[in-house]
Image (cartoon, rainbow, N blue to C red; front, top):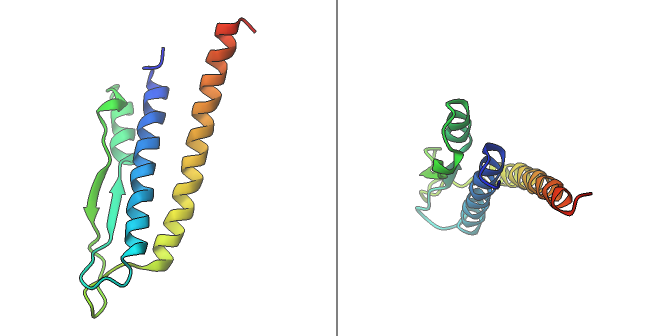
Length: 115
């Protein structure tokens, strides 16, 4: 019941978006740390591919990589404007995903109640 493709994909999306939020927070916290390289979290393409191929979305895990963007003189490559926009985008996606899960579980709750 809770392992259908849509529920699984939504749970993977929540995990990936939470990991991205954590990476963004770390990037911003280290904006002045010499030599710090920004981290990026990707999972959407792998999730899309798994669903398209009929594979379980639960096999998809967020992948963290180091940004290859140019660095400043201190070796740091965190771009505050980029991180801020990414934070806003990720927050909106996270909220939308949580709403979708909430709606799905509300429909299940209503079905169980017999409403």
